[in-house]
Length: 193
Image 1 (cartoon, one colour):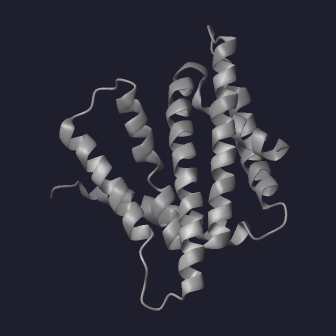
Image 2 (cartoon, rainbow, N blue to C red):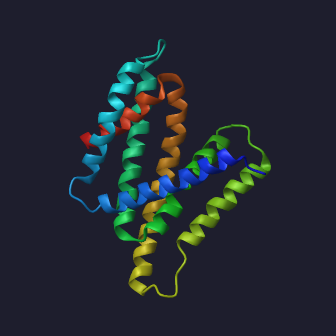
Image 3 (cartoon, helix red, strand yellow):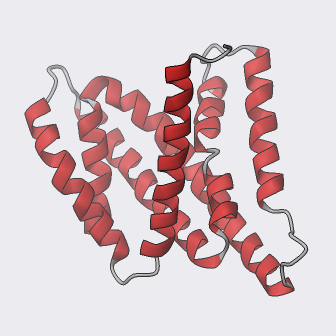
């Protein structure tokens, strides 16, 4: 087979988990203090992990500033995602926000990361296609629903851009301070804001 069976199962499982998490987020974003509760849940899990992980020797204060900036990007991106989920269809929002990885890859390419031409072209086409499909109109959609979906699409696109930048920065700074600290920063900042 072109894709090993275990890898295919991983991708299918990841798709189901992502879809389930977005459906839950669509429900949660309608609840009072939803953002705070999501942050608390994440902080309860990640804080002990980060404390056990410890602080790497040679970590500089600028790395911690970047952790805060990456956390701020995650928090702001999530707020835009929740706003989009409260406005339009989950399918529209998920399709657009899922381009965050492609945006992070584009940022890496723009900053000099080696990239093949076909890979770059594929990412650009996939990202553009998702945006076009996400903003399309179904025959049964009312004019109001189309307006709501377009507003949700704009907020989802902003979220994807912010998440993409935050994802790139998180990956960069996690290589120096450790991933648990980057994740914990976003959770605690989410609680505090």
